[in-house]
Image (cartoon, rainbow, N blue to C red; front, top):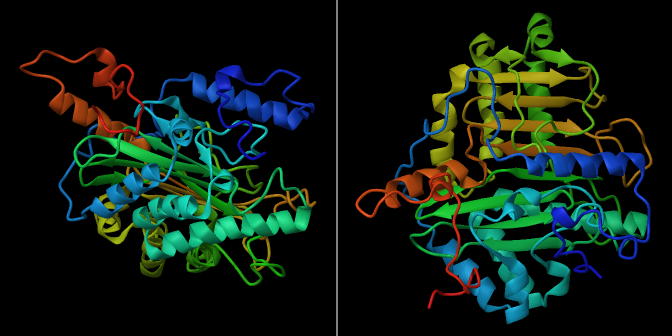
Length: 416
């Protein structure tokens, strides 16, 4: 059943042989080991040489009212029974934030409540979280990723691995107009983390991918994702001279995965490639258009604020390419600045049996460097502002963003 492994934590992983009736391959063992090692590290965030320290992005007021998202969260929780709420809800500082992954569900256990185990109305309530967090385009892409995961089921005939509703939703903290809370959806090729504090919203890390990227038959025939991300990245390279392309290219062999994917929350990335300042005018315009495509996944009011942050650091932004440059070959590209990390990667086959990367399997990733993923730095600033002073300094854990619910309180339920 879809929800059977939902409550295992990685501290209990791998499960006992009686629970897991299969042996991990060497590659799967490597993935589990990577997950355990990554989660054992305290969170610091993505970093790069020359990037600023924590606090360079102070919280600022926005014009983006988040009442619809708050209402969506409360409606979703109200649709669940007590057992389902217990499965779905976590404290604001729960390590489940960092346990998302693109791995198969039986390889790295999921937390939260599985959409496959919910009724139609409950699923629609869960999808409202996505819809109110993302732009119309971002929401369409996320839903199409889920539909193409159903197409992967049509191709493979493996319902234990693929399906439109094989995704887990979690609520962190208690949805509130003033106190920090958030939500997460976690599953194959769709991992969205959303942190909310008042009118502030952070929607990273976000990984979206698909194999295939186009449904050529079946229930969702014609559905396609990531055409813009692929075409705009190629068009940017095409706008460069041969010398500039060589400067942008940092390697020839594509990575087996995006560098800052699951369990790489503290990845240090050395800048490389070509800087924004060294791009020709057309190249600069295309880089800005490409950034706008990724930032545009976020709801419009907050996308504008996010774009202002990213634009402020354009002179510190670099574009890097891995792989050949031609009309058919697979490729990887990256955009890196103190304000944003974007990765795009063509992958080898999993659904299809191809060992080399192809344009029919794509992973995209957006992160916020300098400790800002999961809203961690925003939460830290919140506790420093509101939990110190006349009443004494809060505990060290609170000063670094940790938070515990009152004794006996179930996260997500109203405080008594």
